[in-house]
Image (cartoon, rainbow, N blue to C red; front, side, top):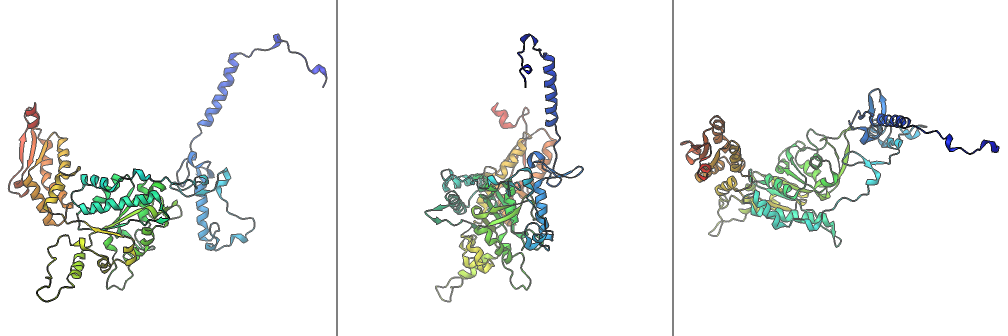
Length: 497
């Protein structure tokens, strides 16, 4: 290259670029970027997740795109039907002998790492080793504080509240520490007996709300052995995962309450297979003790198109409850076994009037009832709730924070009407509940029966200012006392003004 190719540029020869040209180029660049940003969002045809979460989608047909996660699960499920992929032992075709054919991890097509399952179906491998958030042992509520909170919502049942407070406190200390001087602390699973309407479910629900942990309440009557119609045993863990918002770490520190556990007792004098009794007890042993359970997300049963995740039940607290009918007869038979003839012999009807005889239950009584020893051994804390009497029912009506009377008073307060109950009326309601033998569960139905006409008439008459429920009204010997408004206000408000 010669020197003629180079010459000095005269400053006067420099061409000025006008502002209009610069603006025109800038506008073109902005329009190009806007077109990229305004690209329509695409959704997976199977899981319906957007591409900004799943990543680039695979085009299967016009208007049909599938994410890599769903495509990978589809290929994995094909392994069980003789198409290869997944476990070759389940396949009718040995794909290892097929040349140039292999099933790849589709996540690697877009530069993603291997996938592992979590609450959202998959997560990247760099999150696999991330430690789960531990509970701070210094922030665990002590037993006396737990009982004080339970006292605000639950009337009576002091022994049951004390047992539950200590068991929960020890359980979450175990979760927080893991091991203590190389001594592994066992789980504090509980078995709660008690008559219907004594507050078993309400105690557990209140306890979970105070501790701010996820709670799953399930009914044991719907559980069956795997392969039969009904819910699988793992479905109780699926409900806890849903209650935790599909957060695996939070789910593994929750509480599962299995009600009607007495319905799983072994059937006596039967030649049929007990698919909803003893077999369910045996299937629950691994859950109670602690094991890795694969559960579906957002469904109660497993299938190829539902994502699954693995839950470890080691730190999940299990509370089982049941009314255990006829258990009192088993306890009476055991207590009367040592009675004999003579002046010092016990009377056979000595325990007939004992309303809290369930509190004398032992492991032998549970085995006689039909619970297998392995199942009882994984529920080390056994206690019973008290039978409710008339005074306790009256306290339940008016003392708790969300008492039934307070609920109806709030409903009528919205209509600017004051509602009061005489003390005699409360005792009359409690007596009716005792006669029906429904416990606290029967209080609401009794009050609803007498409040129906009052709640129907109040919106019709704006002059009603106060309603007093009397004992005669509950006994159907008279009606409630109704006071009219004075100067448009409830009488007490008018007197104050």
